Amino acid sequence: MKSSEKKVIINNLQEQIDSFNHFYLADISGLNAEDTSDLRRLCFSQEVKLVVVKNTLLRKALERSGKDASELFVALKGNTSVMFTEQGSVPAKLIKDFSKKHDKPVLKAAYVEESVYVGADQLDALVAVKSKNELIADVVALLQSPMQTVLGQLQSGGNTIHGVLDTLKEKE
Image (cartoon, rainbow, N blue to C red; front, side, top):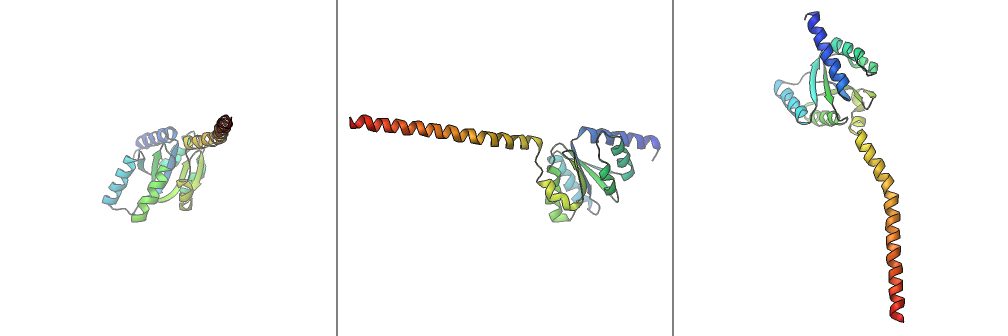
């Protein structure tokens, strides 16, 4: 491969790293053509971009990117595929479900919510990671809960007073 071709690939990888909020490094080696095709279709249907890369080119792209992903360098050994996504936990769920049948892909590392996860043992933690919007929704629900309780009690108190007044009215 010529150095000009390498530069183009590095620039493309850098653009993808900078444009996507989350990415996973996985090993999909050992999958036959049919299984690889199934994995690619599954990734496409869940809006995950799957790219097979050379480790040295990915390392240079990571170094040039605006993200602090230097901790991922230890995972750049063997065969590496990158899964780019906008939703942090989708590739983790995809890897977990697909690997039940095929023993691949294997999670090597991930950059999710500006945090680095290294090793296949982090897969369960990544499945449970909530997106920013999900966390905001949880906080809003927590803030609304006490207010709804107070309003419910005020309304039931008003109904009780109304019932007492009706009873007193009937006794007269």
